[in-house]
Length: 389
Image (cartoon, rainbow, N blue to C red; front, side, top):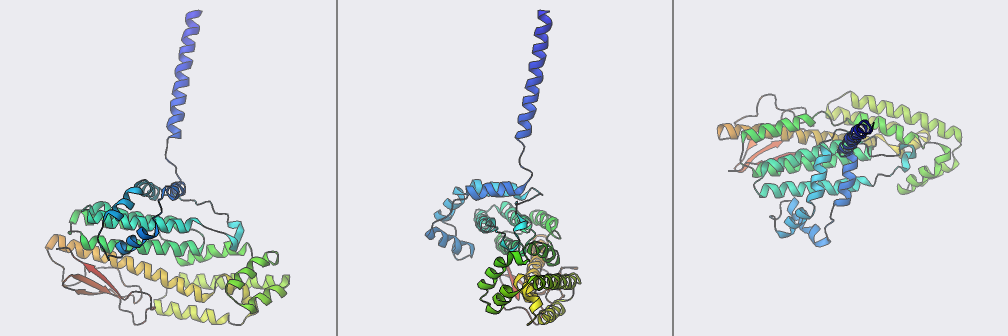
């Protein structure tokens, strides 16, 4: 009896240990939500002082080489960088926003994301300066993955995502221009970028999601939120309409808002050539002029603002297409020892014109130029790439 009990106790102890071990293993698994790691990185990030920040900006813009200040900043933030890399490699990213707040929804994490994006840009440039081009290019991929994680249901997150992606493209240009062309590294980098291509949501998708979020507070009961937005726009006429508006006014405005969102979404999904799309959005904007029923639509999202968002989206994709085209040209250098006379077949187009980029070889490398006649003033007409000797 005693022996039997002892054996039972021993067996029970073994089972308990196995269960505890299994529990520990389960608890030791990394998070499956990238946002949790990004939030950790926010806390780990060591903010630079004003003098260091100035040096970092000069370094990121290629105005100076790495020095002890840059190196110290990178080393102080090594844990934050490693945490961001881990986060970027997780598919799911739920930031935990409360969309029921509508136009009053705040997203303080977006400012922190930009800081981490600048940190990754600095690290990529620093790594390239150390000759570690493979990891530097990996940081560019991480930036693109961050952009995908940032983009959520609101257009402000979409715009921040575009800004982060622009950093990825610009940093890629810098790293490729300083790295000796290596076919194996370039093929792997192109493959990594290709896996992120096509995952960036369209402006039409984000517009439809934004409409759902804004609609949560498009009622007379939430009038103060609308008035506050009008005050920020310094629009006295809109404030007066909101203050005097009855329930019927708000109902007509909600109906008009959703009808306009539908028109805008249909237009964006039509995938028209750039010039025609801009003209279509201008026409829709004209329809809203001096229309009391368009009051809330003008506050939340006018066709004029949609047009600028569309232009930014086109710029983002065009820049990415230029980078992908450049990688093929760098591959040609790695394989043949020189730049080709013409662009490789099936190179992605400049989306402003819908045509292939105008390609010119230079003494330092090559340029890819947009061929559209009309491009917004702040958008680039030309992408300049260097080739390391």
